[in-house]
Image 1: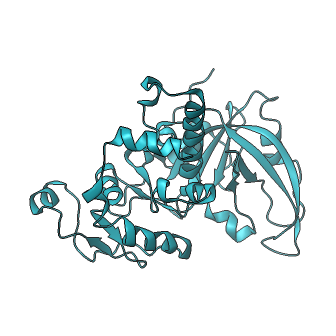
Image 2: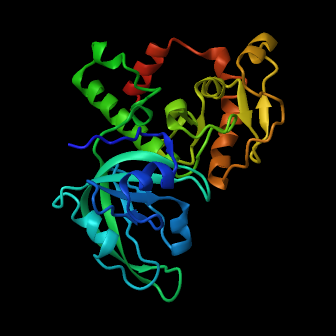
Length: 311
């Protein structure tokens, strides 16, 4: 089996790192290199202009729209390649577009579970058409998606009952879904601009334990991407953000710590505006987390067990 020369979460130049190595179409959403064992698909905001958005469902399956800008989509070209990639012995690789002229983020290897037709889908030009949507499942979970601040690696060593252990698995599944959906909302660390997922954490804005529904816990808009140190400050309430993205830093943060963290923690620093959906969660963070959580933090293992039992 051919080794995949990409690391999940890392950034790659589409021309140099992908097509110069494997060939295939250098434009479009699906590339089918003739002499390569791969089918390469690209997801991102470009699809919005063509009338569709790729999404993760509640079961952790990615619904990926096929190619074709106008007229009904056909099972031909790249669409056929994805539909038959298992039978053809091709491995399906998925990349995320990060913006015009920017590198692409590798999201991992996927397998097509099935496909379906979606009528009345908007087109780039002309009337609505019928689109082909592929149901794709990741073949493995990488570190960024499995990392879990609620269900830490202590779980296998705790004397948990079967029901609690089952809840722990459900928590991990929900956390993974949250992280995948977050990538459709946030592309980089708010404080540093780092985009490589191998150096980022996914942080809930409204904490997991404070969410009242499963939808809030898995909502990608209820999150930000941050480097580990910035994530710690945000999660513990040392920093927060205004709706328009201005950084707020508590006066309780020791000056020596602030200096040695190596982050630009200038009060009022512009970190990019938040969406309307994110703003609703930020209101909770400013009211109930900022300047409060670090004053009442308990033992993390105790918090873990309490959270699981509350499910």
